[in-house]
Image 1: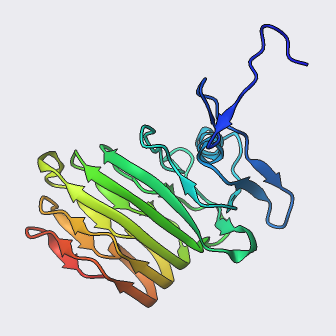
Image 2: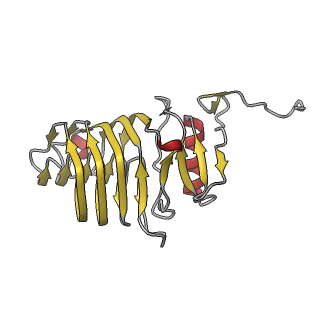
Image 3: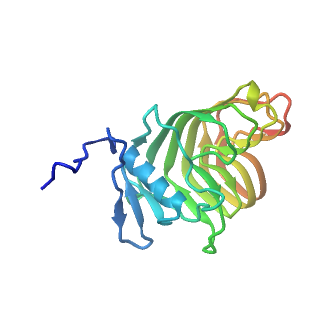
Length: 239
């Protein structure tokens, strides 16, 4: 029963015309988390995590495409860094398309800030990320998967198809990678690839086809298939 004053949500891609997002499904598994299978549920998860309401793992159960008119807000902030894992149901590889995004702030990617939750390294597996990032300001730490990782991170069987372009206002940006922007602790990448073109001629330093800058770790079965343009950058690498 719906009263005259109540609104019955009609979701398209998990988003109601009133602006409400469909709730994700709670997964009572070990480890527990939220299951998302459309854009609205993913956006709802971001709101829950970044507000501190619910810091659980993320499970992907379908390909997800963010509507072109939605601005992506990365999972994990300085106040509430991401300290969990991203899995897929039944270990199937799924796609997340972030569409066309304007990057005006530091710590940008699917995950913005990945921090230390005291539970070991974070894991991301079986994900392909698509999209186009246009850098419009001088920023620090941008990557398709993680912008700024200051805890140990493991990415497995995952691929970036995110193209990154820097406009004039992005002059001086640093620590930009096709997969991870900056990693200050141990990072392990296994079966990871980048197909996204990086056109970053205004970058100051720390540009790589896979990782912008890393402190320690290992890259196994990792390859960059795309061009990396950053003619004036210090510490430039294909990987």
